[in-house]
Length: 78
Image (cartoon, rainbow, N blue to C red; front, side):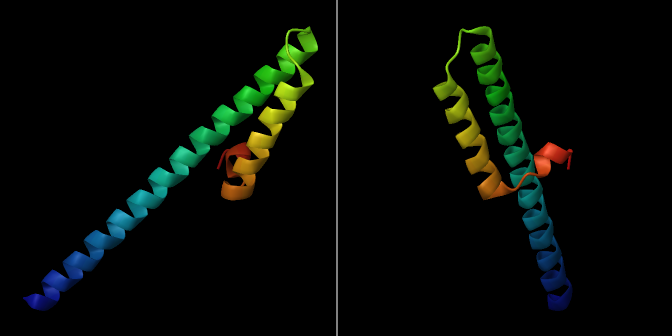
């Protein structure tokens, strides 16, 4: 009986770990999508004359930092 409980506990732990990894991936994708949207908005505002190159550069740097930390999978629909 103890072997069964140990296996069940290990399986449950694997499930929790996989679930947390998936949640982290989803949160990273959402953050990346938001940063990409912010960059697009900053660039659009700059082109229309209502934004600044500094705002566009800041948005680009934030996106690049996110990519360095989390990868660029969200850009490819992964």
